[in-house]
Length: 349
Image 1 (cartoon, rainbow, N blue to C red):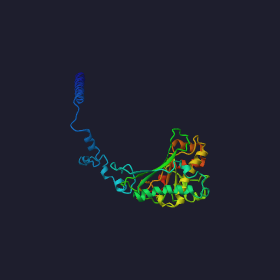
Image 2 (cartoon, helix red, strand yellow):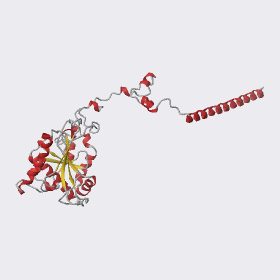
Image 3 (cartoon, rainbow, N blue to C red):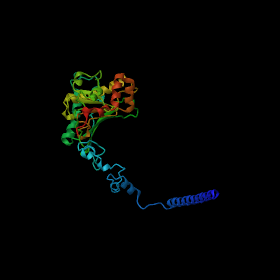
Image 4 (cartoon, helix red, strand yellow):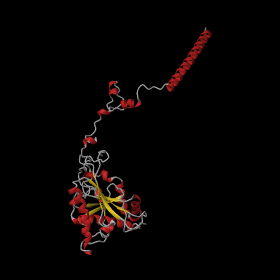
């Protein structure tokens, strides 16, 4: 009896094994056929882009209908009121609001006699007593003519102001008297938003950390009649440039008095000259990439500020060979992003 039971069990196991192998073989054959069919006849009943659009639609309507609660419904996310740029009409972003159909008007202004900026202002040690104010008046007249032409005659209040020097020689170390500077004024897009309103002015708030760490000492050649008019700075974002701002809160060059206009550009060349001299730069004279003094909605902040842009390689040379440890440390703090963290300078919602 026991032998019969054992034989029956063995027979059942054998049959189950055969059936299992047959099922496995059939399944493998089916999968192989399906795979081959899929490669030969790709499914294209709906475009991929449409499916992706449906899948990532912020409304997720299909997930609600199916009762699928395993995914977060993004349409219910409660963003802050200031999340969208469209909800911030004061937001200033030149790329987003650039009008491709807008053709700006441009103007160029040259001095009567071609010369470098440092010569135009009489050199870093110039005082009005040297020539009874001849150079002083020449500089003021030149920049007054620019603001009068642009703002009063052309009726433009929003514009970029770019000063650069041109060279008639390919040699970057050339100090030719034929080299000269000029100012280019370009109309700003009228649809561009004006500067953001902030809790405090970057250039006026002496209690802000950004003010403290970005302030620069005056060059040794700077006299009192210049230092009483302007402050000099590192760039708050630690870019390769120096900044000059009037001590008074003014927003336009035309609002400056004659002494402020002259002192702004004299101080600019004094800063570059001292950086060049203290770092023993291997080039002749002073050089810079350009100076900007933008107005209206072409600015990022309201306070008038002259940006003295320096080539990265030159700026690194100034830093590595001309700065003391304290100056390097303050610039390093600015590089850490203190400007963005400075609560006293945050935008007003």
